[in-house]
Image (cartoon, rainbow, N blue to C red; front, side):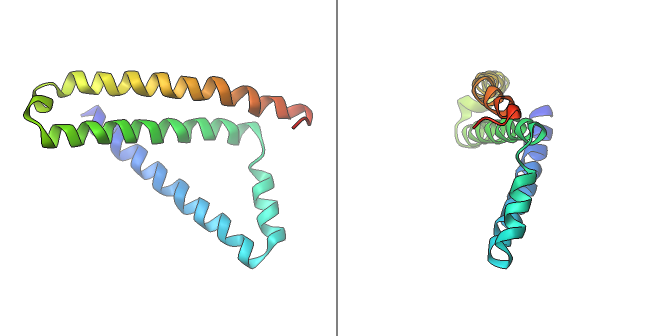
Length: 115
């Protein structure tokens, strides 16, 4: 049940991110100044942590989607879907922690004005 809930929640979160991304990118056609202002608001540590959450959602959704495909296509995967889900969680944790370990220092290094 939790894999189903998490798959739906991450799918909706990714959809809303893509919607906002398309809308803020479309601003460049209307007003480059408005686009620059909106993009400027994204350059803060809260949004940096949001990027980690976005990557975590995408990674979980992708790995769990592959698990769902395997369960739908192969009988052995249906018999081992619990183990496959734990594998998804393991891959998700390793990937997300690896990204966060690289990304968070970059986000917080820019607090002092450095690039």
